[in-house]
Length: 422
Image (tube, rainbow, N blue to C red; front, side):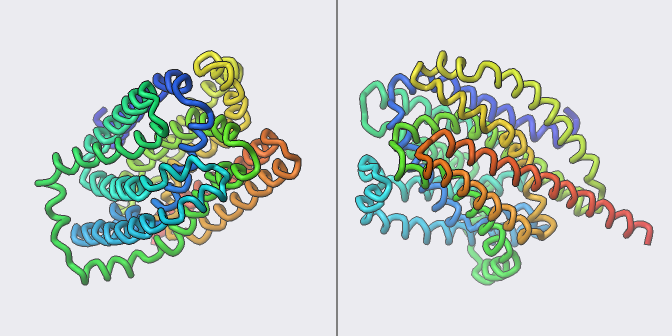
């Protein structure tokens, strides 16, 4: 525990484990309070919101840790805030067309809750920025508090609104919980960490916008393609299959991809800072990543192997008989999930080494493979075939991407050795 990386990772991972445990505990309750159709509406709402949040951040928030000068980091936070306001305003204007958007997806229930989207986009986008700001200042406890409070509040609100038979209770909870957690975090950290952000320097904002333009041009483009790619089953299949099937798929993602994605994000945040410290000091990073990959595989493969055997029965037992198919969906996704948690944990390497163009190509290839898989399912009118095609396409490209990211580490260490020799 004397190791800084381990301590910081432990803070975030412990918070994530508790947050995910809360989610797992309440899912059996939620599946008995809400229908698969309700989960389908929620996932469609979140899919649209995720894309808008990505546009709002423009990936400038990912650069907040990089500058050595504090004023440049502050300017990046302020630039991100301006962009969030712009996208939030456009999202608010889009509520005028909510009925048409709902009709496109053949989900009339979406019309009722679409007006909450601007609030959701603003709160999550703002937290994404503050998240990296806190990490820059080693305030991992702030991040942990947000994760725990958001998860706890969200779970409680979903249950309460479900018992009150409040239509759209899950959507409302997903909007309210982040706002309350964000407000609490800002109020606590205001004096020491938030006040410096209140003094705007227009010229500095312009300078960092130009200096880090690769993030919105290439990194955001890559992230946008990745986001569209990950949301494809919902966005593409909803018009062709019933919302019930989308809801069952949504639960499979909630039980598998969502927890692993949060853990990968935690590992990514701590590894990102730790890697930058080594690079600034011109130190080797190859051994760090070798150990990380090997230890992750040692932890993941045995646990996934056991889960493979029991998943369908387990989901049926915990969630109810009608949710049994979720376990089968997760089975099909497992090879990709293993690769994805590794790639998501170290994906920031592409930004550090200015390889966003190649990263974008990987995202584009993944999108194409996933679309091809889904189209096969649509043509055959078989939802299961669509999910299998999506899973296979995802695995192939993600595995190749993992190998490429490790070559970046090797190349850096080789250049470092050559520089030392010369």
